[in-house]
Image 1 (cartoon, chains in turn green, yellow):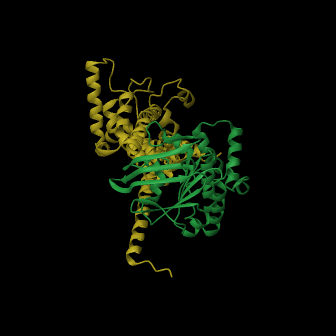
Image 2 (image 1 turned 135 degrees about the vertical axis):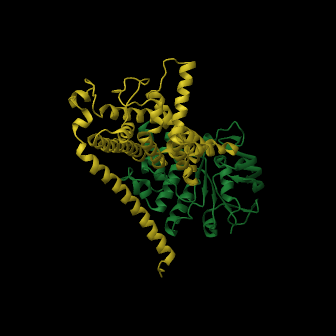
Image 3 (image 1 turned 90 degrees about the vertical axis):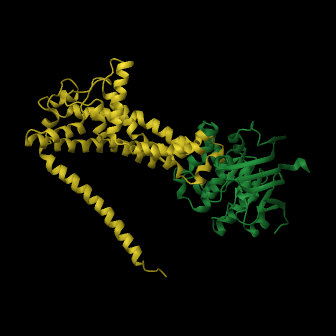
Length: 236
Length: 294
């Protein structure tokens, strides 16, 4: 049913330095669920994620065409329209990368960074939202006494949860996750999986994953991307 | 099992060590030689002459037979040239790394060629331009501190542009995309993430450019420096500078003591450079601290 969909992709094509990567991709991604995108390496899964928040525009040599509509509240918005401001879109469609990428700054500064960009200056509000997002990412108890420490001193799993918390602080409606556990050990990966399962009640998650077991454990819908074509797939 | 390094690897490691130590040794010999020859002349009289140092430092009395005007001239020249060159160099470097696409990238080749232009040619260009402006537009304009600073800024601009561009382009893509993924605009990404991340590379370029401004003689001898001018009073006035004093003394010294003073001036120039480098490093450290911590 269309009203339950959050993202509708039509005729989406993508090329990097004139080499075709996605070929007229179409899909409907449901709201408040975890949708997994699987498929062999090098097929453009990460690229597909970057088309959903127009992050591809930051990559020289990339070109995309087609339609992506996202439902924000009750309004469908064509995100590729020139009227849509990419920073506005990206604040609502958060993204977490394969490898944790904290800024070379303190844990607190990393968390407050998206708010600084968004122009939130009230220190009390910033402190409250930092705490809330860190709690959401199951990280508050581990870092509350060391917020001024360099974020890069955290373990890999903690850094990835910090990056998820940093994306959550703006309360995005959609969170894109590019293999969020691939650089972590099994224990840290399990914590992230629990976290993602909790998050889907608040936001729509689109995740690229290589791990079939992980997809089976947490995904609600699965799409397979191969040879530039995206197709619904059965649960692995 | 750890494999023992092959002969070729060992040779490369040995060569690297040899090169590094060789460079250090050359540096130590040059500094040692200058200190050995110039140390004995390092007395207050070399800097202040007959003028009481406090009076000279407070600019209450002119120094006629000491290096104080040349030290002030060098500092003024370097600060003025860097004030002109750094914003331009940073802006052009940011443009090259972040905005310049397609055939406009060939501009990089122009900057590389500019970096290879001998400083005497830049000096001649500065002099010719001054003469042209004097004849046709500004009759009061002669070779002066401002013209020298502009010519020096032009000389060091390619280093600043290329070091800024390289430092920005070396940032990995994941870091480059982290702020835009959080809703940062391109300008916010540049000023809040990319520039702080490339601070080390950029400041290395600034240090190199500062050193070049402090030591260059060919540019300034055609554009405004003189042997005796006192403390620079205005941007349009002549001035003295340490590298020119060293050049002048070494080519025309009349006594052994004068030559000794030339070596003393070289040691002082090294101190001035060290002072400028320390100031640049302190600024970098402060900026990094401001960005990195709560």
